[in-house]
Amino acid sequence: MAIQMDLKSKKMKIKITSLLTVFAIFIFSKASAQSTLEQNIDEVTVTSNRSKYNNDVSIVYTINSDEINNTANQTIGDILEFAINIDNRERGGQGIQSDISIRGGSFEQTLILLNGIKLNDPQTGHHNLNLPISPELIERIEISTGGSTRIYGNYAYCGVINIITKTKVSNSIILSKGQNNFNHGELNFNISNNKVKQIFHLLHKNSDGYIRGTDYALKNFFYQAKSQINSINTTFNAGINKKDFGAFSFYSTKYPNQFEKTKTTFASLNLNKKGSLGFNNNIYWRLHEDEFILFRDNPSLYQNFHKTSVIGVDINMIKKTKAGTSLFGAELISNNIISNNLGMDLDIPILINGDNYYTKSDNRIVTNFFIENNLSIKRLNISTGIMLNLKTNFENDIFPGIDLSYKLSDKINFYLSANKSMRMPNFTELYYSSPTNQGNVNLVAEKSISKEIGVKIKNDFHNSSITFFERNGEDLIDWILLDGDSIWRTQNLNEIKCSGIEINSRINLKRILNSKINHLRISIASNKVDTISKGFRSAYVIDNLKTNFSFSLNHNFYKSIAIDWKVSYKERIGDYLDPEQEVIKNYEPYWLTAVRITKKINSNFNLFLDINNLFDISYSDFGTIEQPGRWARIGLKAKI
Image (spheres, rainbow, N blue to C red):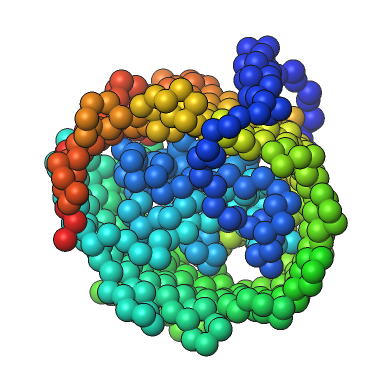
């Protein structure tokens, strides 16, 4: 059954359009100016195609290590909070549960990669950021906005976030203490020689929480080994992330005192070889365990147990020529779940502990074939490709796409792309059943056609881009509440169109003005979803970020003291039920400010003070779930 959507056109607010226009004119008026200043806009090589051929065919936003390390943001979700057109919706704060979405999409429509390895959870996207790393390990974060199914496969519906770890970290201990009885200890060290470069990471964090029922304890372990055997580069990653946390009102306001335990274990191996005939191959495994307790004081009354496992093999053969590259690739992914709530009945239940059993299970095998060709003709770069998707329980389909760029000058590139994308329903959307929710085994995969046009300018003054995009989706999967019903149900929505504009600029004021400002980044995005709900309420698809503005500023304050500022403004379209007043309310826009003050004692010791939500703003990302107010911590980073 599909719900018909009424399409409705609306003009963007004049104030947003004016702001975007003024900013664009200011930035791009500088493009033709000549400068004798030494170039100092850092930019790493990023790839926007499957063959890793750097032909610069699309705009990829990059957050580098300097921006990550010198910030008050303590989690990956915190870092992404201030990124271009990303919606980080949290329950509980401190990254305990972060839902990441891009360009007005849902959190299920974003692919999460760690060093190019897929780590999305087939149970639910709520667990996608259960990653065993801290910001200290991150070299950069690459954000590809727009549909990328022909490159990455499932989940790359609205965009891709690739978190890339460092090859070498400083041997260090980080200790910090903060409000709400916050405690943090972290150890990072290398063991390297001429053959193998190894990284070890251990972390423990805990807090009593900012309100009742938001306490947590988190542990991480991560290991990385890089080596080169003859002409073959190898990277091995393994890690464990464990969280125990109060989930106050996370999934139900009727029974707010909830609790949850999750554990993620993963391992991956990448083998790649460059040259005229090369390859880039991955094998990976991810295991996720989830225990949800509805009544924390009496767990046996209602508990959900889920265990998902993902095994994937990704093989790519790459032929390089003078004009570009050609690729043939294939991947095989096995998604499995055992549960006491999700799936089909097991013939023989599997013991968990005590009187608890896994009674249900499901599995699906996904096979994808990829063909891609990248071509450079003078100033024109073209990347074309197609993915053939073979799925168990869902129809097979093909997903073509094309990305191209034209180099107008050494400083200006124009971009154009069109891609078809998809996402399959997860196990929760198919099977979940509770007194207030009901899954739907008849769901079909959601699909879209994404188009965008943009321009990127890089010179001594700034590195900037502006992009216009449109996404036409069909059969979108959402949890909806029909008028007069008391149960949220999953359904495919017929048709939804999303369009918008993104402007991003990193400005080098230090070089131009000889100031104490190390860097300034400004991002503005506006999304418009041309639909209204008629006869029902939407939990995710129509509940999206309309306006997103952020800027970050890092400057030297006095001698060895540096200050980093991050500010964001978010305006959301959507509503929620206030259970106390029994009325439907709209989300209120809000500003957030985070600041870090760093004092360099000497080359081995740094003191820091972090304050999140500096002005103690009251806000909510989900319904009436209160987010943390001002939260400060003080700490020491010592090299060993």
